[in-house]
Length: 304
Image (cartoon, rainbow, N blue to C red; front, side, top):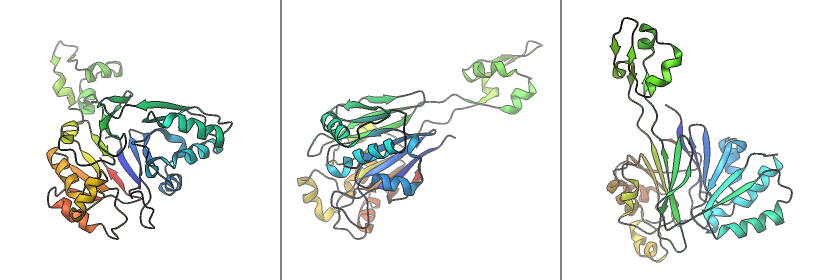
């Protein structure tokens, strides 16, 4: 099975601490690397993670609060100094385009690669990126400014060939693609070998949902039904539920409700308030509702 991993670069909230970095992740799917949010210090975290800068093909920014995007221009500048030539695609709310262009002109004169900006309508649930093997879908969220999450979903693959059956029936290599596409095989003596004997079912497509800053949305689970891995912000514990409501954030138990209702396989908590020296209280409150809840931490790599 091809790799599908989430690399946690930062899982803190807006107030800097010595414990956590600002929000950023790298989603690795079938040898493609996508960054989600880019807070301050992200490029240092990239160094620590040993992720190759040159393989990063796109950056998805959920919203324009500094702890989610202030590291972007510094990273773009560093890519230029490293001699990047491949285009870098940026998917973000439309308001960022002019700001980013001004920053590039001021700080990054003479870039030898293209920064391609793609405006995301944060109010719509739609495909915003697609290639042969993966699609990325925007998830409208409710924060103090336009904000969306992102659903990374593999496209279905073809069935697996049974090597021993191919050898036994002496099926030529030229027919492998036809069999993967569903064709039967007719042997030299006219026997029809059904496709089901020649193949095993394809791996089920995997999915990862990143739900950035948002107040609790009771209907959000409908957009991520059956997701394999869900990251949902969990800034506060229940004792600060009123504060979460005021600042349009979620509690850990609310994140767990979303995971439970979406029938997710696993929940990652993150975007922790600086008021918590230890996040065990968040984890315990989430697990009381959704047992498969886990804390995200810098340096963690989670398999989907």
